[in-house]
Image (cartoon, rainbow, N blue to C red; front, side):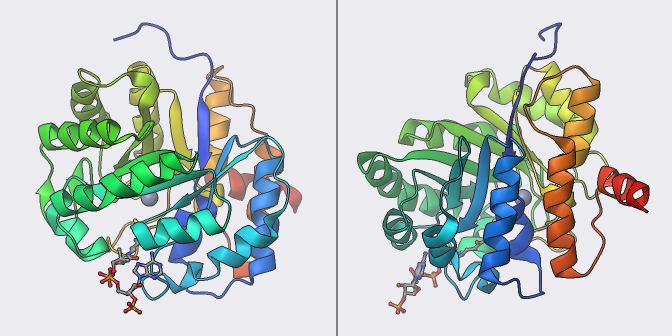
Length: 303
Ligand code: COA
Ligand code: ZN
């Protein structure tokens, strides 16, 4: 285990996708665009803006084409979108995306509910999608959902997770988001499973995608940092959940992660205040407060 924490980490903002896909309130496209623009301006290096899944599966993101068509210049920020299959890739290419994310899981029970395939079938589906994306000049992230605990199958075998990660990398993904979809993991799980994955995969290719359902997300970040992981997902204000994982509450909040990393002396390049402004804008649209501790603290300070 490295004795020092990474000096700098790369944050991936997933609020506009993982967060907004879970909101029942209708959010106008121009508000989504403004939200994404504010997040980019806050210094987030990668923003997952939307997804090209079946509009019936996730009606909240059915306007992904319009979001991309009207997003405009996002400065230094890299924009990414989720793609489930060849049809999704076709739509992402038409929208001008340069980076996509494909997603599978470490549990057949979960992928069947989510994408109507087994894990092996999903890998077979993605292989040509990833190949075609790379041929079109895109780069590809791979998500491995339910990497620790599955809401349907329970405890997940770390060897299965490693296997899926290795297959996604062999396919051409340049980053694997090891995901605690229901937020059940604790640092011991991170050490065991991510430690096992790192026996086969370069740490620079591993990201941690954490949810905070049980309040363990930041301790899991710390466990990841101890292993040398330097890529973390977070969602502005702690928006989020998963429509296919009942009980999964919000993602780790970007504000809470940025505060923690700032305080730990780990550089992010992200402005906590500006993320708060973006979250506040979307909170106003949703007419509800957001779960992030830092968001609530700053909100109270605003009076
Ligand atoms: N975008 C738009 N339409 C799509 C599509 C996509 N990505 N993928 C498939 N379709 C259309 C097909 O063209 C077909 O249309 P037709 O009936 O008019 O010919 C129809 O959907 C059925 O296609 P099929 O391949 O059988 O898809 P499916 O119904 O088995 O759905 C997924 C599979 C993966 C597309 C769907 O389950 C999905 O989008 N899931 C996303 C779940 C998600 O986003 N979860 C949250 C992230 S963790
Ligand atoms: Zn998630």
